[in-house]
Length: 271
Image 1 (cartoon, rainbow, N blue to C red):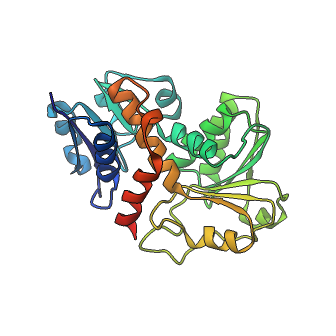
Image 2: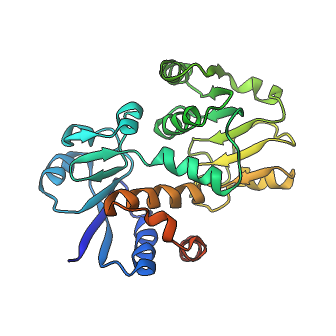
């Protein structure tokens, strides 16, 4: 019997999730559909009560507000306080899994690393959770509003003994060379592609962007120009989608997929 899935958000027109999931179904010969559904906040309650979908991906601005309409949360969604995947009334967070998988795909060893997070919103929280699971050495949070950075720091400190601190923008240029720097802000995202995080990129840093549109942000291009390793949000986006499919189908879909074909299809939509 055909299964039906969707991603919900507001706005949602830009989402590439249908392209990603339809390619998964095509590769594996699965009879399923995936659509994007525009749900303004005022309609979320009635949608969650009435939809008959087999699984849902949830994007901005519903990742927190969807929680009251769910029967239960898995441990990571509970801890992070955000849901981006729903199955049979249960909420999951696959954003952090997507980040960890993307690091693996790009041969980045997180254990013992010093990490800097730019931003302190929902994406930052999922990534801090992933960093803690990977036993990094330290986490520094840089955010324009000090209070939000402080909140994220306190939350992270409750989860582990990893050293967490907040940094002001002016100290970004004093960072040691070997940091992993992760942009969790919308700086550089389409259509405002000219904006970049402002600090001096140093030679042994690894730059990670959570943005996947454009495929390579101006910030990552600048990093490449300086010869540093860069990872776009593209791999993370694919990995969180695969992790969602694993949950919906109850098997390791992600291990059976030809990644290059998925990337090709998505790139043709972006370029």
